[in-house]
Amino acid sequence: MTVYRYPTPEWLEESGKRYHTTPRFKQALEKITTKIFFLIRAEPAWGIEQDIIFGAITEKGTLIDLRFFSNQEAREMADFIMGATPQEWKKILRKENKFLTDFMLGKISLEYGSKVGVLGLAPYANTFIEALTQVELQFPDEMKPGELTEFRSYVSNFRDRLAI
Image 1 (cartoon, rainbow, N blue to C red):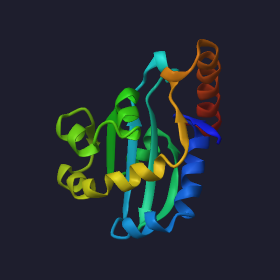
Image 2: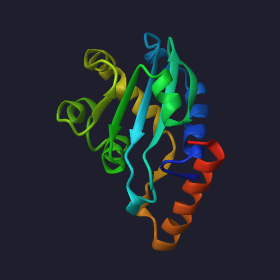
Image 3: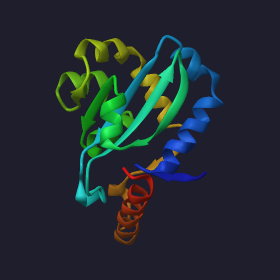
């Protein structure tokens, strides 16, 4: 099984492919039309030198786009921007913590959008998290020192290439 590093374009691309080939995701999210973005706060120890944003655009459960966005692009398009440390996102993606609980505790902040709107989406969070975790993920804190050095360079390169 291929292991995907978090956060990388390959992880998002493969997650999108699996979303499209798994009908239960679209069915479970058929009432959702939103542009939601997730800000991963900078964490140099994890090879994330600057904040990075990925987002999902859905229309009636159909995934239109899942990728990294520039800060400006996300802010122009977003219905919601949620922010947290990479360590917090790891806990959510590993299903060690629940999105709604961590949001209410302030571990995940609302950077943009309506709190009431986020609470309306909260019942669907587990389905979206499931869609993002159909692949095996490796987080930077699980990498060996040499792998982390290579990852840091890779993140810098794909950020330049994608202008994010």
